[in-house]
Amino acid sequence: MNTFKRSNEPIAWSLFGAGGMVVAFIIPVLAIITGFLFVPDSSLRVYELIDSWLSHWIGKVGLFLIISLTLYHTVHRVYHGLHDLHVKGNDVLMLVLFYGTATVLSVVCAAWLLVI
Image (cartoon, rainbow, N blue to C red):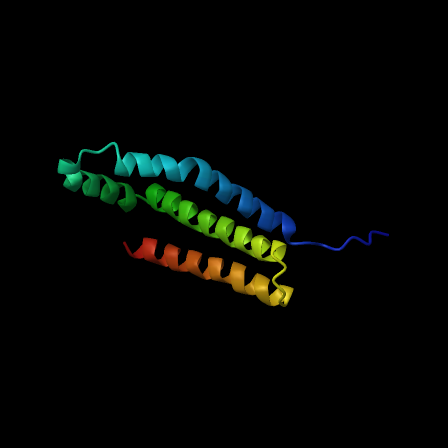
């Protein structure tokens, strides 16, 4: 008989890991590209470039993944940081609060990207 209990930890850790990769590799590159490599006089050109990127569905999916995976990474890190600091609370309530907030904000991000 198999008496193993199913866990949601692999899903949480995979979102945490993917978000960590985004935070470590993609966000610094985007910051360098949009913040430092463009000449300040050509700010209108930067806006047009970002606008054209976000008007395509691939750009929208990419931005959604960047934002939502960063949210899940941050939530996971805060949740386990509070656990390490011995902050007591109902585990189920804290999981729903943290991961639910990340899910709601991801849905809001998806809705916003569909509108623009």
